[in-house]
Image 1 (tube, rainbow, N blue to C red):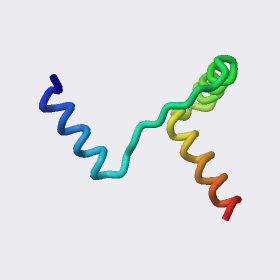
Image 2 (image 1 turned 90 degrees about the horizontal axis):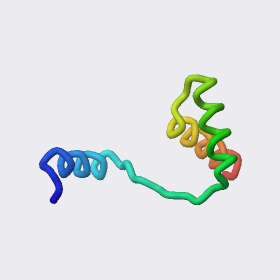
Image 3 (image 1 turned 135 degrees about the horizontal axis):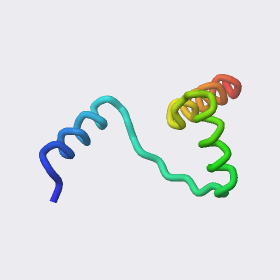
Length: 60
């Protein structure tokens, strides 16, 4: 059963436009990406979002 906090979190995320995605990628790529993000001091989610935005802009 979901707690009140988890329900509130899901409600906020939906309202704010957040969503979870799952991708299957090669382990080596994922591990190297995690290491590179840690080395650069950036979050993996933030870096993925920046790369997605850049790719979208290039495609427009």
